[in-house]
Length: 355
Image 1 (cartoon, rainbow, N blue to C red):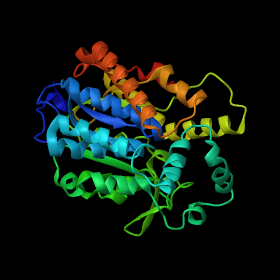
Image 2: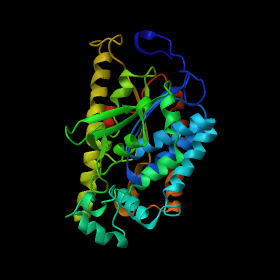
Image 3: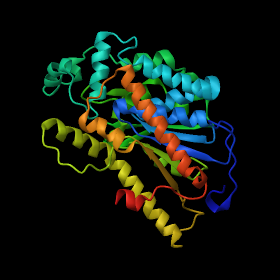
């Protein structure tokens, strides 16, 4: 496999997975409970063992999955990463060890992403429209913080400088994306990436407040253009781009607005990838100066979309396992159809998919 200017690519020393020419960077979307679908994708890729992962970029639940995967891999290889991912999702499930208040807050975090309200959430949901987290959660209780602090050795994550990790958050002051890298990550950086402003107080890092990274990059792709050797990017997409129906209820309208908002910057970057690729193929740009990205995508299709459209999302362990199984099936089918193309050509037609 060759990269820009035809140079030979070898696997980085810290590569997650086997030392193989089949190397990709992962781009993990955020999406509340649907992050358990991404867990299934990662679990199958680790079990299959044919892909090496040079870098991961993620936002919100995608950032959480990325950090959990990285730390688990550093501690125990493929088996360690799979075990750590399972332990995290079990930990934050309603069957885990969250207190009643933590469960309520985590459930509100998940339900932001397109679920109908649970009966227990109707009262707090109504109040959240007139009162923010500074009123409803004055003690700033965050179940994600407790789970991550308990499970993740961030010192180990920061010490890994070979396999690259990028976590996106949104600056409250400027409205711009901020990408934090592996060597600087703490639990606060991950919490910032997953900070929904209707549920949690803004996370302050070096005196600046941050909200969920999905608002400005879900996930941010540009770090993979400049900071990696591999030209192959595998996007794990959990938010539908298109819905052939018109939302009519207040809940349906809110859900669709959330999907559009959290896809907007990803679509912008994908259009830029398509534009640069077309100019390179037409001979108008040189691969010496520009990277010809090979894009790939795995997603749950209508099976995953239906959960958001018609089913109530929740934090039950059985539901998480259902999403995980759907992710494993999607990864297995995608690899069977597209493995040979990795390192040679894109398997995602960007113009057809997004224009």
